[in-house]
Length: 441
Image (cartoon, rainbow, N blue to C red; front, side, top):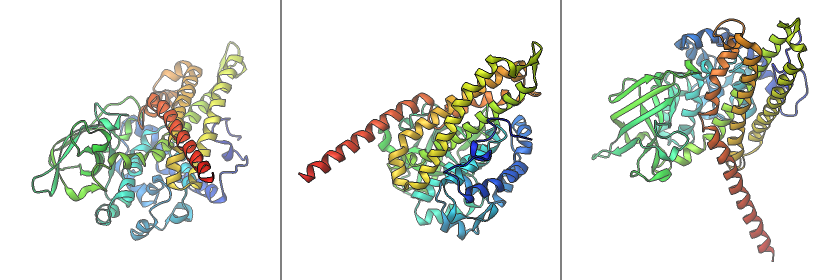
């Protein structure tokens, strides 16, 4: 049977693409049935139960799938040290690029739900990279073998009750003990994905005085499960419920001083290096959710009859599908282009050139998802407002929409940041051109 329109991007519907190589196509063909079996066959059931069974994380680790959530290039030396030489389908870890990561992120959300996949990969994808990039050799020896193999779990813990997109407003304090061997951490973290299952958090803390802003932030690996002074509880959120959103309280938590990632006061800079990867990941997931919502509605209106004919025969229905579809395919092409650019640019160049645009991509993805989810619920009618039956997926995706528009930098903040970053980049380039011209005179 032919594919429902909008159900897959053009490159997966037999059309040519300049972005995807034979390696990318083999990877996609390999992981789709694997992720379907390990995750999607029961994703709706697990989201409704609000928890993915613990064995699923172990299954993904055993299949060498968790590492595909890391930014490219992968930490090849470390992966080989812990026995991971290939990913499914024989993809060598040294050949993995951002397009492979893009495909993995897209396939992880093919059920239409972010929560089940996010319960497995969010902490892995964003909590481990700072250790790889900025941790010293001793730190990496202590943590990476168990984290990369899935024997231990990690999360990223930045957000607080009063500091979300305003990262510089973090107040959780880490004060050196008199003996100098520990940091004593006090504060709270909120909306921390995967926190409840995590052995460690890569945590933003304030090592500088109150009011020191970004310059006073540091990153610390804070032990969580069972550690004295740490208490955690799950938060009831509207969507992405199975992802394990967590509230963490820290009361005189003693953390070894050697758990400091990099240098004191460099935390904000380290955090910012995660943003391209994190925001692209959010955009990819939201774009796939938009696909599932719109294609599900498309399939429904082909068969649903009203006023004596299929809904698809109503011009207003076709008009809604057309407008949402145009937004979806534009967003999808832009996300593919971003992933492609990140395979071609060095990490330093990508951080400089794409920082503002990645914020815009992430914000746009949330807006497109909102439009496609709105259209799906409207076209499903009452079924789209019901938590069971044939419109259930539209209802579930609709509740997930804020999870794309708020985390990773809320939409309004991202829109403003994008333009500010573009202005800053333009001014820097203009200054450099003028300086070069003056040097020639």
